Length: 438
Image (cartoon, rainbow, N blue to C red):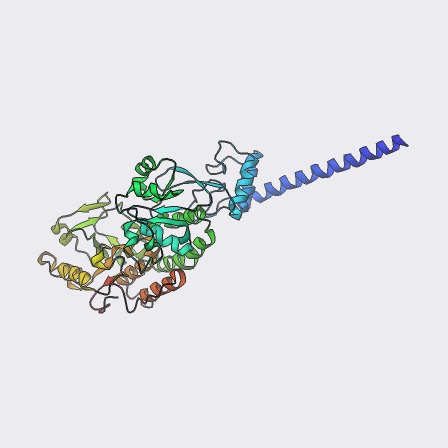
């Protein structure tokens, strides 16, 4: 009897092992068959967050499947597959990717805009928005609804109690350069800075995580917005802004301008606003703005970000359109929200129109000179600014495009502040198209 039971037990055990092996083989087969569907699609960017094993624009179940393929030797290791960033691919990476997908990870490792590999402890509870581009970080934080995670801000944010009502009440950490002692006194677990001060900030803020993002280059803007969403646990909010606002209007513009021939694109001269005849060359983000809106930079042959040019060069290259920036200072309404006084913008427009050397330039002769607040030109608002550019460049092509309505939509959808762009603000100026300055 015992022999029969023993034989029966062995048979059952053997069958169980067979079933387990069969399940494992089926799972491996499923993973292998899924390989054709998990490679990165033709995305606009590769999200530089470790765990993005298939190198697309998000971290999801496809990355979990892909990293398992790597583990089983079915796929070559990708740069971002090591989700735990410990030097090897193992089941801990499976766990980390699952945690990132559901927003429960304890750490997140990413490549920031200074090309530094940074590990952020999660959740972020005490962040400081420091230095020159802090206002762009602040925009994103407000879009995410994460103001309660911020404990200190730069003077640029302190200045604007209309556009950034809650954040402007927080303690100051100086302007540019930042006050690093003030930052340390707030005991933050994370500090955001632009890329060019990342190394300095890291040295002066020992033990504090420093993340560098910029928010002024359209080529990487959506990736930076997505990364910040991952950092603050606001992936869905970032996705909402990108899909339902950013891509909606940038794609709308591109759909028309990508059809244009080179001859149909107007020649444009952009004056930076820090003095006459200071402009941008080929390496500035202006080039990306023009690629989107269908214009040509008359100084695109200069391989620099910014440059001072001879007035005669402007005359010789004869732009069809001139755009001039004004800086977002107190006397110009901050980023446009703090004043209804259009006089500063109007004065810049009149200065350009009345320069004797420009009298015979096509843009001046046709009164196609436009002024825009440069603070409004970058960050989460930049799609709004580019709707103005598109309409200035191609008024017939974008006859039905209403930049003011798009601006108002942005405020209502993402900020919830009581601000009417039809009645208030100094964002752009042209005396005919915008007689009241809006």
